Image (cartoon, rainbow, N blue to C red; front, side, top):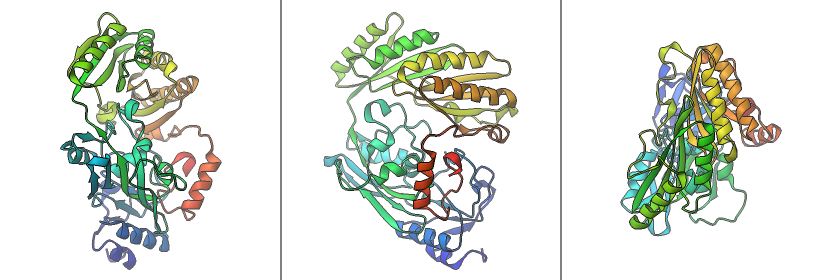
Length: 417
């Protein structure tokens, strides 16, 4: 501890510890863990780190710290979990301001008493800051939009310690560049998010799920198209897929009688076999990658894919074909009506690497892309986790403006940014 820079010690008000093996980021070990409790302290930490040429990776609960590239260098993990204050909940205005370190589950409890919710339900929840920094959304994205659509304001700290604010506490902000949207999904490479303002939505009184077992990609595509164009406007449409078959399920919400009628109408539209339930399917909103990705010594790899809505069937067909290849199995779960999902590839390393490249080509063929979220080291070493990127020169230019010294999460983002 004596080797820690004095300014870094002072910046954390004593909340600075030596790092352990558990603090490593994709095999890169830091020297210290700093846990500032206010935006001012985060500012002081970043100013001290920049002055001493220290590389910093922000971290919430760490549930998504295995995503992206390993940092090129790492000295300090900046733990945001002390930034967990609920700053403001204006229930009448349906807005909320929170510290970035507050857990998403705690935040939903904070607003539940007012009959409200934050329309973010990622399958792997963590802190608010981590959810925004990785841009993760769950089934309700169809109704409420992606994370960036729910953020109306943000406080962040630049690499040089300067505090910046974007947006405000009203839904319609018209002044200046939308910095919050730029930070959303930037994986902590442009700034440390310390506070976020969100728009909220009321919790409807009734929910019904309509689920259809589908046997083959063509039937799955037809079900998704029926739901995507339904006048009943499902809140969410999800698919669970493995070994050439699966289930397509839709969530309907609203007043009790109307929701029941809507669900029955949707079920009739899907045809024989569709069922209406007052509870979600067991797999709904859960993470395919929740299992130990290193279990069985196999190359368990989690890949996030995007696609055009019309590409649901072809993508599921490709995943089925991957499963039929020797040495690998593939499963998929996602939100076909918004074109986002995750595939889990399990098998020997060579087969998983080949399947990952095959999945990437299949996603590109239906207007999407594939990003490796989690993978064993021997798989990660043989694939570009981010894959091909457009506008890479522009992204590098933005990084150079925000963080010219490469202090924040160097190398973690697309193209080694």
